[in-house]
Image (tube, rainbow, N blue to C red; front, side, top):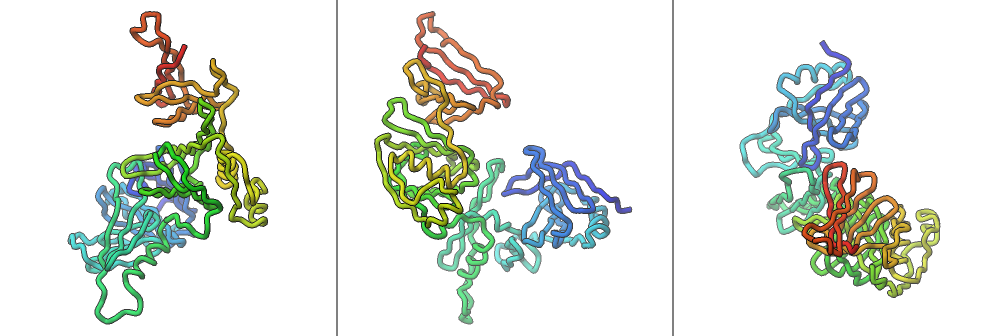
Length: 413
């Protein structure tokens, strides 16, 4: 007997190598998945579903829902006995068959690569050995007879697939198109790669970065920021920018421009959730933006002008505010004993500056810490143990609702 609603509690949605647990609900109109951790809803309308597949995976069985736009949702954690109920439901409400897919378990590493929708299916003996969602590909490079795919990493995944290499032999009957180039092109069509299309709006040479440390050429593009250094290259899409800060250094000679990001930028195994750039306060800069007057009016609402001059930190702040579309947080009304916007203190082993803002605290620069007021459960002013009454400094402890405690120490009384 087919029911009108099916609900499954312990189901995982596969996202970039991590299994996000949640609840799956199938109803007449489509499919809804709610993640337990974030509460995020994924909704698929029945009309958008192209096909459904059922296959055995490492943990139980998987229901793969392929959409007409090429996207795929992989739901794992089903039991073998769930097949009949699911198949009857899909037949009755979505008028589609639940196709049983038998995977190749031969362990061979040579086969046929087929591009289907937004996936790359590697087949051995006409059975899929593995399927790669091309949306997870962050970079694709070609070599002689070879294509290397690199993957976006998911911070919640304990084990991540970093890269795959495909060896593509050239066939003797001289083909019109190079098979390596053809394979690379098909990957790029569906991959989620930030590519520099067109010219940068502006390039600022030799910018000093404190985190990640080094000197970089900073290129501002319409949809992302590129930092080009001698050894490393970073691309930061504006969609990953959470907040922008502009903070004066305690000696009044420098300004810190801070970008907070999620997901963070990576350098090997190190993750940087903050980008900290240091500008000299007296450093002047004049620049002509690579934008027409129409683009400035349409896209940026006249917030920036074609020609800009003045202190470099002001120009960068105005530019970033316009392209990212987020306001810039500056220190609040707080003034320290010596009339500064920050307090000198230490966090862990590094000494730095703590800035009380209107809605939180930020510590720069090593390691950078941002704590919002709404996530703080309590604060404590602690005397340094063993100070014997003559202690000239105290500790400031901030405890968050998640149980994390940040201790800012050696603050002058």
